[in-house]
Length: 148
Image 1: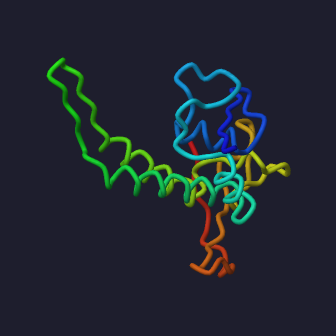
Image 2: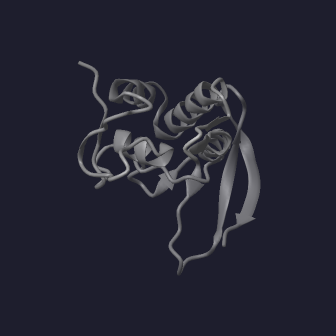
């Protein structure tokens, strides 16, 4: 049986991805998701194969592609009107942000996520970011950036 579950306490990486994608029931209570966009097995397979941030990016891109194929707008004579275009743009931005390291990786236990050194607010507000090639190999330091 295919399942999709969600725990608002975000006890798993699957919960984190489902929350970021907005793929949960509107009540956001623990348990089965009545009308999921993705199944747990799909999200878990992506996490296992690629890690949290890339799994989030790929799931967001998959949803953007899926919904981009559907009609942009739906209207009924009763006044109900739905628009999907903003949802597609949101998922596309989410994928970009995940790959850019703007989104924190909840699986990181050492204080580092996506090549960015985490600092507390009382510490220096700069970090060094490594540059990676498209195949994921390190090509060297690209300098520092101010964080606000």
